[in-house]
Image 1 (cartoon, rainbow, N blue to C red):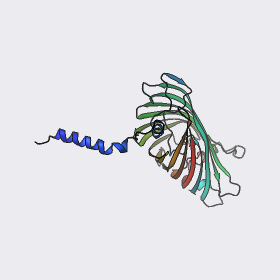
Image 2 (image 1 turned 90 degrees about the vertical axis):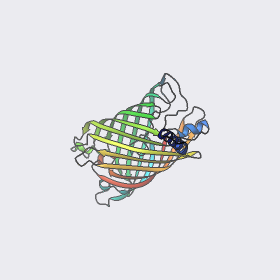
Image 3 (image 1 turned 135 degrees about the horizontal axis):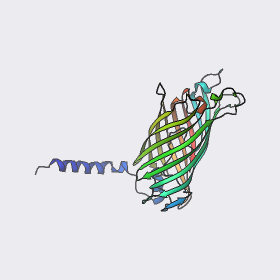
Image 4 (image 1 turned 30 degrees about the vertical axis):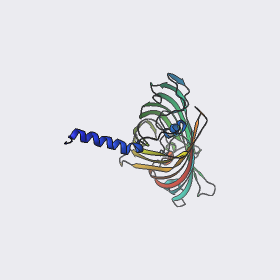
Amino acid sequence: MAIGSTQCVRAAMAFACVALGPWLEPPVVHAQQADYTARCSGAVTEWRAGTVVLPDEALFCQLVADPKAAHTFATWLHGDFAGLAHPNSESRIAIAAVGLGDRFGLLRLAGDRPGDGVQLDIVGAVFAQFNLSAPSFDLINADYLIGLPIAWRRGRTAAQLRLYHQSSHVGDELLFVRDPDRNPAWESIDLTVAQDLGYARVYAGVEHRFRRQPSHLAPNLLRGGVEVRYPAGTGRFLGALDFRLIDRVDRRLAWSARTGVEVARFGGAGGTRRVISVLGQLYQGFAPYGQFHLDDISFYGLGIHFSL
């Protein structure tokens, strides 16, 4: 008996689900390990309905390859840093880039299903870079960031709307008191939307700087990226790629890539998860460091990252 086109389509879809299912869905394992596998998919160790004051976890997981993600880290970087180097030295130097940051949950309105809801957080971070090629490991730049993100999640889709302030200082106000543009600062609002696809997550976003000092700072920025996590024993392999396009006359593009492994330590049932990642990284494009935003840099490096 001949098989109609409808039956062929159904058979093909069934075959695709069976063949690709194991690659698109995390494996069914112990509850605690499953929660870790889905850490960036809205899974939580303890979920309460209704309004939750000071929630333990975030609904929108931070972007792994974002150089300004608010978390604690220490990295060694080597490359062409142009204006970051001393005027009398070569542009290819080694620097130490470090950060101290965290996110603190303030209020959550939980949805009908575990993992869904709306949450207000506060985030803060300090990022600093030191010239390891200088005799005294000179401080190059320090960026300070504080923000109020509102995250929303429903199923595999999540979004974050964030209002934040960033300013850059290196203790040089007395030296550059007549040059206020030396220490740039801005207030921004950005929106990022992410979609979970099994072991992968894709995202895209837009940012608008509504107050800028100096005024020649780019007013708009587009971003996008992809992250892949795959479980391996008690940890996960991790790869991430982030693109940013800044709205200037020359449409400047920067990309950041990180890959490595991450492991988690659980504090018991319903306890806090501490995640440690060891990641190699590559970067090329306009500098993510406030005072050097006009410079184009490129580097490779290795770092250790800590987050809750």
